Structure formats: structure tokens, C-alpha cells
Image (cartoon, rainbow, N blue to C red; front, side, top):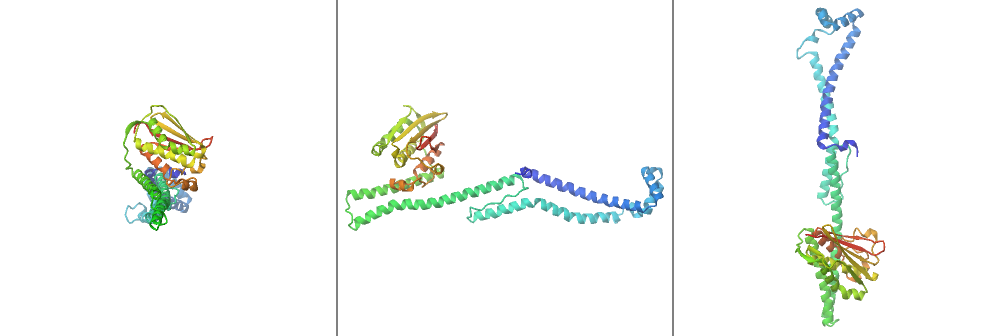
Length: 390
């Protein structure tokens, strides 16, 4: 950034007003001085050599012969030179100088503040475009503007970039949401229509298949509601003290049969007593979501290790699997809604793409975080950090 743009708005204005004032006075005084200097040089050039020498001597000591001094002045400069009349030639010249200088100084002053006006105009045009719904609008920054204005333009452009990103994500989310809602709904309606048409016998098996689709639809609706509450900062948490190790064992036991069928071995490394003050139900939901995510995408690795450690003021849970992992580029997006590393595998497993985004929302509601990393040994490692006290 140029040095001129590192000035604050107040300093920027003060410098320009000061320069404008100083230049105005300097130009005015210099113009008057030049007028008198040129007149004196011209008249001295017209004087005879003897008079010029006499004038130089008397001017060095005017009190020595004031009468002769005024005679020379009146003869060569004219009687009006010492006349204080407002209509004298000198005042008229000053008036002409003012009339000439004012437009020049006004033009220079407007030129110096033009970058600020242009920058405001560009910001206004960009803001008007954003108001119309064009979130890609950007305000082109200018040089020679105050630091506050440069920062304002940079923040405005960053804001519009964020709005454009949110708009793209919202549109993509709506499309994905419609697809996710339509899939189980279409399946349930198709099965019911088949029973109504006599294609399927309305027995316990057929009704269970319909119920499964409706449960999937209900689960998706619950997930979307939780995310909406989290976005609005209205997710209610029921804080109380519980043993995190017991909660982990309970959730592992709940998923044990499915893990055993998939050949997934889950190991837990944690102290027998690991107290945590948080919403046990929501934390348990995070654990379940991670376990189910591992079953869906990493069960072929045959192992999932869970390690609980206490940090300063927080508790950390690390879930490391031995599955195929994800690409490094996908790490930044894997907690976004309706995102999947491999769509076909997610569809086969029935995943909606909301699990990890729900886990992140719950962790953030607890003032914690969840992150992902790719271990050097392969697989995927998810780390959940929660403060010890909510």
C-alpha cells in the first residue's frame, strides 16, 4: 500500500486543507511580490544611470534625504503609487489577481478531493447493486484515499464475497434439500401406491418399509430444524455434569451390533472418570453421528479408535479410523450441509449429508469445535474439543 493511503481520514483532510490554505496565501503574496518586483526592475532599467545610482544610495538610507527619495518615486512610479485610495491601481491589480486565482484554487481543491468522491460513488454503485440482489458487485479501490476508506472498501468487498458465497450455498442447499426430502417421500408414496393397487400385499413387511422411509424423512426434518435453530443462535442446551466416558460406552454399545456386522472393531482409550459439564443428549448425538459416519464410509478399515484426553480447560475426543479417508481438498467442506466425499457411497448408505454439519453446530453451540485431519498412517481423524464448563 502506498504511503499516501496510510493516513487516517482526519489527517487526510487536515493535510489537504492546510496545503490548500498555505498555497492560497503563498500564491497570492507571490503574485503581488512579482508584480512589484517586475515593475521595479522595469523602471530601474528605464532610469538614467545617474538617477539609478542616486536612487540606490538614497534607498539604502531613506531618512538621509526623504524629499529627494519621494521625488524619484513620484517621478518614476507616479503619484498614485503612494495614494492609499481604494480605487488605486494596486487595489485593482489585487482584485484582478483574486478573480484569476479563485477559479484556479477551487479547481485544484476539487481535484485533490476527487479521489474521495469517486471512491464514495463506486461504493454507492456497488451497494445499489447488492440491494438489487447482485452479491457479486465489488467496489474498485483507488489510490490516494484515506486509510479508513481503503479499509472500508476492502471490508465491503469482503462482505459482498461472503454474501455471494452464502447465496450460492443457500441455493445449492435448497436444491439438495428438495432432493433429500423427495427421495424418502417418493419411496414411501410408491410403496403405498403399490399396496393400494394390489401390487404389494399390505402386510407387516411392506408397512415396515414405508415406516423406514418416513423415519428417514423425520430424521432429516429434525436435522434441518436443529441446524436452523443453531444458525439463529436459539439452540437450547440442557447443561449438567456427567461422565463423558460412560456416555461414550453407552453410544458404542448402542451401535455395537451394527459395527459387529460390518466387521468394525471400536476401541476406547479414556479414564474411567471424565467429568464434563454440557448437554449430555447433544454431546451423545455428536458421538453417534461420528460413529454412524464411520460405519457408512470407513467400516472397510475394520477399526475405529477413540481416545479421550483432558486439555487445559477442555476435553478432547479423537476418533481415528483406518478407512480410505478423503481428499485433502475435501477437508474444508466436509462439515458443510449436504456434502459428501463420494455421492454413490452416501446414497447407498442412506446418508443425507447433514451428520457432520449437525455435529459442528452442536459443538459450536457448546463453544467448542470439531475438526478433521488426515493422519500420515491413512484413514481419517475427527477431533471434538469441548470446554469443561459450559
